[in-house]
Structures are given as structure tokens and as C-alpha cells.
Length: 242
Ligand code: MLT
Image (cartoon, rainbow, N blue to C red; front, side, top):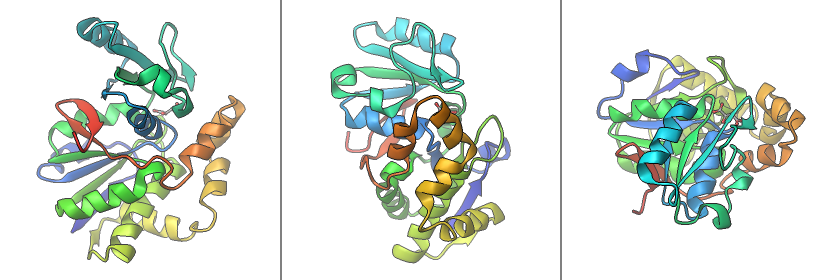
């Protein structure tokens, strides 16, 4: 299997996706929030880039089913129902609803999902299911790390590295890696016993702690804490079993 990882969203990726599996990673926090919303019974999550688009989408699907979630600078967007803290996405708030989500970085990557054969939301919270699905799909893999405002982020790269580690060392798939994938694998293997600390000390971990979201960082760093498999179907993220 060929596996290419991109440390930051890159325009090159779009030409390389046809027929492949795409894993979109934003550990802090969009991917973790998507997993949590679906686990709590949301029907679907619709990822959009801008708050205005989110409001238009809700007008289209109706205020009884559509709820608005998202952040800018880590804080809930004005007039939105929910922010981007996975812990806000409880059954009480989202069960049976369609969440329209816009975040600073994480939800932007989903527009690329139209060219890939399979698009999966990847986080540490669902990592074992993601690795197994990638293996079962059997096609080449592209891992796209959301990063932070166009810059590298350590938690997304660690998560990408851990997926590759699982594929290579646990599921025993032979892989041909690009250099960024090799780097992610090395980064993960040298942090195997200190993942939580490394993430908490990273830029985004520190930023979220300052805003009072330390519980989000803890949850997002917990391996397989939210064992669901969100996949993109017709521009909506749903649980794979549907
Ligand atoms: C993002 O998309 O940049 C993140 O999910 C931001 C956040 O932590 O809320």
C-alpha cells in the first residue's frame, strides 16, 4: 500500500486522491467533536467552511433538525447553538439532529473528499477503527493533517504516525511511505509513551488549556475513547454502518 501523509493541507493533495482512502485528521478538536456528535446520536454532521454557509445550510434543512456548531479562535461562534468542544455534544443536545459544523481548520478538508473513494474522520479517539477500515479498504492511503492556520501541528502528525504504525506493525501491511509519512511514524514512535504529555505541551494544547478546555485536550488524547467510524457520504459525515 502506498501511504502519503501531508503535514498541512496542501493543494497537491487534490490531484492525488482519485481511487484512494483519505483520512482527515484534526485531533484538537474537529475530528474528536465529529466522533462525539455521532456517538451521541446526531444523524449526520455537515462540515462547512464558513459560518455564513452554515446558517444558509440550516435554513435549507430547517431549524427543528439542523443545529449549528463551530468555533473561531476556539470560542463558540455568536448565535450558534454549540461550540467545538466535544463535551458539549451530548445526547440531550444532538440526538436525532443534523449538526452543521464549521471550524477554523478541521472542517475545511472535507471539500476534498469528493475525489477520494473513501473519506474517513480520523482522531486518536477512534484510531483503531480507522486503521482497520483503511486496511480493509485495501487501497492507497492519503492522510491529511489539518494543522493550525496552515502550520504543522504536533497532535495531528502524531495521530497520522500512529495510524501508520498500526498498519505497519500491528496489521502487518507493507507500505511505501512519502517522507512526511516517515517523519510522522518516527515522531509517533519516539512519543509512544508520552503522547498525552506531548499533546498537552503542544501549541494548540496550551491554547485550549488557556481557554479552559483542558478536558477537551484530555478526551482528544485518549486512545479509542470514542469508538465510532465517521465517513463522508454525499457531503455529510455519518456513521459507517448506515
Ligand atoms: C480547528 O478546526 O482549527 C479546531 O478544531 C479548532 C478548535 O480547537 O476548536
